[in-house]
Each structure stands twice: as structure tokens, then as C-alpha cells.
Length: 214
Image (tube, rainbow, N blue to C red):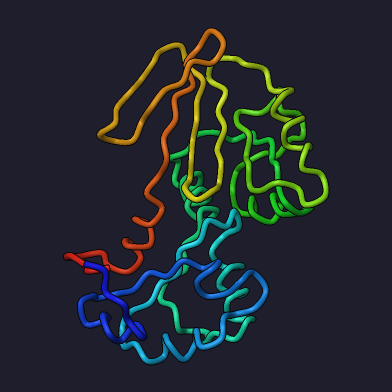
């Protein structure tokens, strides 16, 4: 049954922590929503932020603070950019030569700091395409880069969107719905893909042991 609430405190006692999406919930991209700080200050719960931003967690945390939220209000800020960065740093993601497509100049160069990764504008020389966002003034740029990509087995695309999506062109069809894997026919091969539970990374930051009601 749908329950209409006046504020978070009406239901906060049901949970141990509250995970909030960033854009459209806390702010509109440039300005925080009226009453957002007051609403959260009235909730005595652990707070975390989840975002589909292609940038790392640090810049997003600074952005939120710069809009007026108290510096230590959120125990965890987790972004898709952070999840992928950590995946490469720990070796879970093996690709090391990336062709970036970004919204703004310098985004990929800032994101890649600290990683043993090479950025190249030549998609044919890349292990994978790193799609961090679509260029503001040239929406066709991404399509042109991807169109030039050779369809060779082993070619991968990593996309930072509402989830962290990874697609790999291989010789075999693999379908494993129990873990979120699926395949599409592409040329002579199969495009095998899946998406991550990036929200799980936020959960891990909040609770290492035991169960947590979110």
C-alpha cells in the first residue's frame, strides 16, 4: 500500500541508513533543492549518496559540499566513475588502453590519475571504449568514434550510465540471467554484457559486517 509521507522522519525508524540519489533528489545539477538540508538534518540516520556520475567520488562530494550541504553530512558518496576506477585499480577490470568519450575536456585525464592506464584517441588501438558522457556541443562525436571501432573479438565497451555496464564482443553466446549476463548477435560474434550493482558498493562502505536496512 502506498503511504504518503510529509518528511523522511515519518519512516526513518524502519531503516539503519538512507541512500539518496544525487541528481534530481538533492539538487538539480546546479542548485540544491529548497528544504533538502533541513529534511536531512532532521533524520538521525547514516546517510549516503549514490550517483551515475562518470567522475570519481571525491569531486562529487566536493560538488555537494559546495552547494551548501555540511561537509560530514554523508558518510559515503559512491559514483559509477569511482566503482570503475576501483575495479581497474584492484585488477577486477583488466583493460588498460582506453579510448575515452567524455562530456567535457580533461574529464578522462583527471579520472585516470593513479591508474596504470593509457588513454588513446585511436579507438582501433584501444582495449576498450570508456564512455563517461556525451560531449555537450558535439553529440555526433561519440557515434563517429564508435563507428570507427573495428569489430574484433575481445573488443569491449565500458559505459558509465545509470549502472556500470560492460559489453564484450566474443565468439560464444553467454546467457546467465541469475547474474545479469545477456548476449546480442553482432556481426560474426556475440556481444556479451552485464551491469553492476553499483549500489552494493555504497552498502559495503556503510556496513562491513552484519545486515543493514536501507
